[in-house]
Amino acid sequence: MQLERDMSRSRSAPLVPLGTRALLFALLTLLAVLLIVDDVAQVERESQGGRVHKSPRPIRLEPTPGASTAVRVEPTPGATAADGARPSGNWTFNHTLANTIRKDILRFLDPVRDMSILRGAVRPGDTVHYVLDRHASTHISHTLYRLLPSAPPLRRQHHRSCAIVGNSGILLNSHCGPRIDQHPFVIRCNLAPVEDFVEDVGSRTDLVTMNPSVVQRAFGDLLTEEWRQRFARRLQALGGSVLWVPAFMAKGGEERVEWTLNMIHEQGLDVRTAVPSLRLLHAVRGYWLTQHVPIKRPSTGLLMYTLATRFCSQLHLYGFWPFPLDPAGQPVKYHYYDQLTYQYSSSTGPHAMPLEYRTLRALHRQGALQLHTGPCM
Ligand SMILES: *[C@@H]1O[C@H](CO)[C@@H](O)[C@H](O)[C@H]1NC(C)=O
Ligand SMILES: *[C@@H]1O[C@H](CO)[C@@H](O)[C@H](O)[C@H]1NC(C)=O
Image 1 (cartoon, helix red, strand yellow):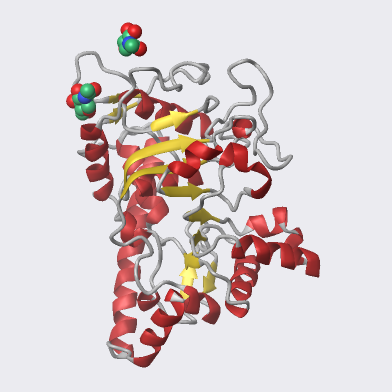
Image 2 (tube, protein in one colour; image 1 turned 90 degrees about the vertical axis):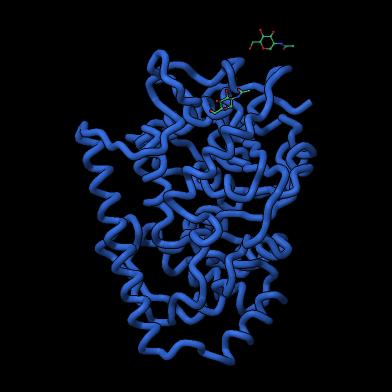
């Protein structure tokens, strides 16, 4: 509905002459590339043992005695998360700290704007270089162009509390569903199924991410009519929430993105598509680098936390547990809904999960967010 209205509006009146727009776009692209090159250089310096210092840094990997910074992440990789992540009786949110973090993040990115490329910023046929594969490029298709939002999807939203639901098997038998659904805004990752897991994961979804590879992994690459229908039903079930598709992160997902968008378009499915800005990943990485958390490729969960600081006063994380065993020593599935297995270390899996987790746990201890890892009863 909303989309239809916006689309007809933008079709009627091109405000800026095409030549100017192209020039503007070229300038913005150049700026983005410069920023990215700068960020990449930073990451490289960091990984070569150099240190990057920028001003804001409330979070640190190594605690320095006597220093006044608020958040400390212990450098002990062996310490699994059994300790400290569970809310205790007198755990409280530290709004001062949360505000500091929000402000620091805003120096690197504007979550409202970087949440999605807007239709006004691109044209069909524009070349886009993949964020993680700079040598490969693709084009803005007509369908993508049509489905891009004309205004930032979460503009002017602010919520008292938000839940970010990770996909760890730790959620199974947690009975956290009702608690999760109580939050006025719920973010989920990678189009994780909820239907058969409502008791443990809830069903409310205001924003859900979708890596293009999900089409292949969870929907049979849409090879049969049955898979296509299943996929369409899953999207339709989103009921107007934001579908966040990192279409330009890594090459290889082009067709799947296109199939998805065509399906949404042709069947008029009720979702609000968003495609993260090309600078988002580098900006997020830049922020965490200044916190001395050198994450080369932030997970969707960490991206969502970083973005959500902007929209949410209190952030609650569920289903974040990058360990093969639970605190009682029982095996934990990588995802609550499938049989995928991964190592959790950065050398084999795609992300630096233990480091991310230590960071989140430190933030939890300091009261910047609440990490729920136990059952909700
Ligand atoms: C909250 O965080 C701020 C900034 O890090 C810190 O100075 C303050 O002591 C914290 N307050 C509480 C109650 O922990
Ligand atoms: C509150 O926390 C302190 C230390 O962090 C602990 O010693 C105390 O037992 C806690 N009180 C309650 C009521 O949980």
